[in-house]
Length: 347
Image (cartoon, rainbow, N blue to C red):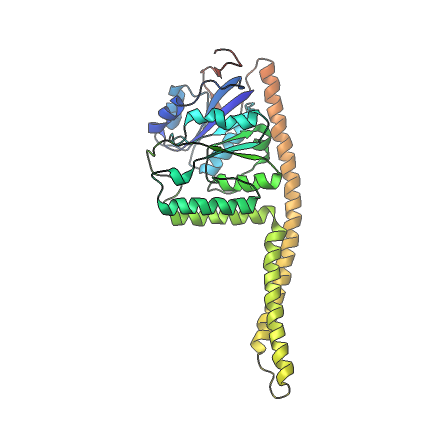
């Protein structure tokens, strides 16, 4: 059983050392532990620091591509490197390495496909009251949109089985947290919530500059993800609203026309707007149909990608069983030995 802990980084030279030192070197049920650092175009030498620390794998982007791209590239690399379990954590040491075994436990037991660390945001001292309220409200919205019981939807501290990692895809450029939960709900993956505690904040978030901007961008991610995976429900409801508006306005015109004819007809504005609303309802209904057909094609494409990812993982397993080291494109392997715990001997 192989665990790879991936750490997306952007100019984390000062904090990477503490984060790396805090990672567990052995976990019950895990034979091999390795660490992958994804350097998202850092300009402060983060990749070089990672190599000096003894990080096992380093994937470096020549320019900044964003957290979502770094996360997705890391997941793909972990599968190619033969990871059975993948843990994603932040480079700023926000999450405690001591919680990683608890995060992996439901995956190893076969009780969940994904385990997400619940930061219990109401208890975090440096979170403002507004941020706590928004975190609670946002997680509730994601639960409704995904059909899951996730508690802390924006937590990036999570563990995934190989099957779950192969199933989830990130399409937006902002963040992976919400979109992957909605996908997990659509795919029927089981999510476990693991209560955790966080370390004191050592720097402000680089993902967003203001709460308003964060809400706006995450809101767009939720709407787009929901429309992608449930197009009929999304556009169908809009079409029904437009149809109801059009029929209501048309009925209003007919009522006054019948009750006052031939004295006056009037209220032609209601007729014009009503007809326009009915036409729009028809067009939106066509969009729902087209969206459903595109969703069917996307599901077929994703199924092929899932099979290819799982095949890559199986090839990595075969290489490891033969005593060879699996490789991933663009990933530099250091000379550092893998960490081997009670189930894999001592490195």
